[in-house]
Amino acid sequence: MKKEIYITDYNCVTPLGFDVSSNWNALLEGKSGVALHKIIENQEPFYASMIDELENEFTKFFIDQDFTRLEKMFLLSLKPLVEKHQISNETAFILSTTKGNISLLKNQNTLPEGVFLSSLAQKIADFFGFKTKPIVVSNACVSGVMAIAVAKNMIQAGKYKDAFVIAGDEISEFVISGFNSFQAIGAEICKPYDKNRDGINIGEATAAVYITSELNQNEKFSFKVLGDSAINDANHISGPSRTGDGLFASIKNAIEEANTPTEKIDFISAHGTATIYNDEMEAIAFNRMELQDVPLNSMKGYYGHCLGASGLLESIISMESALNNTLIPSKNFEEIGTSQALNIIKENQPAEIKYILKTASGFGGCNAAIVLEKC
Image 1 (cartoon, rainbow, N blue to C red):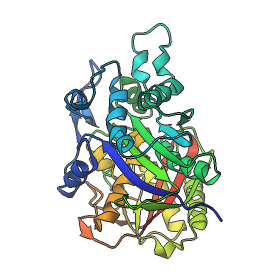
Image 2: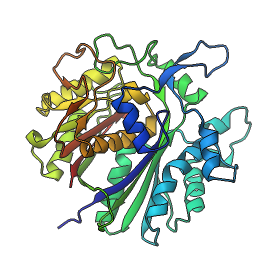
Image 3: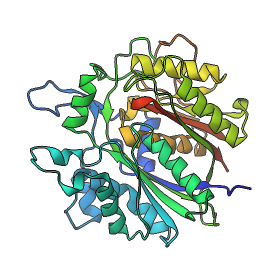
C-alpha cells in the first residue's frame, strides 16, 4: 500500500501580498495585480502583474543583499515554512521555474553562473541549510504542478521523508519578447474563457509548500495528494492539441490513481490563459472527462500567467478556497467563448470543497493534473 502524502503548509509572494492571508483577502475583494507596466524601452506599456515593494519587504527579514530579484522572492516565500518544519538528511528540496535568473544574461558576453537553474537551486538550498542535492523541475508552464507530483512520488518511493517545494518566475524582457513573438500577449486585461479574450498577461510570483507522509498534531490543515499525471501530446512546440488529448489523458490518469470518480470532484482550478487555443482545448478535455458541470475558475485575471509559479500558486489558492468553503470567480469572465460548455464561477459563493482537480498545460505539448483531498 502506498504512503499517503500530505500538503500541510504553504506560502506565497505575489503582487497581491507577501503571505497567503493577504492574497486571500485581496481575492475575496476582487482585487487584481494586473496593471499597465512599461518593461521594455521604446515599447508601449502593456498589462502585466508585477510585485511592488519587494526590496522593502526583503530588508525586513534579510540582511545580505547578494541576491537577484527572483532569489529574494524565493527566500521570502520559503522562510516561514523552514522556520516551522525541520530539515533532515531525508528532506527533499525541489525548485520549479521556467526561466530562473534569465535576466542575468542582459548585456553579458559570457554566461554568469547564476543563470544555470542548478546553481539557482543550490544557492537557495545552501542558504536554508538543506542537506540533499536540490531537484529542479523545469517543464514550461506545468512545472509548478509537476513539482508537487515529483515530491509525492519521491516520498512514496522511499527516497525522502518530506519535501519543501518552491516555484517562481519573474517578468523579464526575455519572457515578454518570447510571448510577443508568438503574438500571445493580450492588448487588454486577460479574460479566460470569455468570447472577447485576446491573449495572456504575464505575471510574476513565488510559492512554497511543505509535503510530508507523516502528520503531526500541530498541523492547522492537511490535503492529501491523491493522484497525479503528466502527459505530453507532442502536438506542436507552442500550440495545444485541438482535441485536448494530452490534458484529457493527464486528468484521466490522475483521477484513476486518486480512485476518485469524476462526480466527486467539487472544484477545478484550471490553467485558463485566455488565449484562443488553450481555453478551447481545455473546454474540450473537460467535456471529454464529463467535468463540464464542475465549478471552475482561472486565476490569471488576478495574477497574470506566472509561468513556472502558476501551478503551485494556484494549487495553494485552491486549497485556501477549500479551507474557507468559498469559490472565487474567474475574473473578467462574462460570456462563454469556447465551443463546449463549462461551469465558470462568476461570483464569490459558498461551497463545500473536499476534492480538487488542478490542471496545467504548457509549451511543447506538456499537460499535468493533480487531485487533492481536504482532510
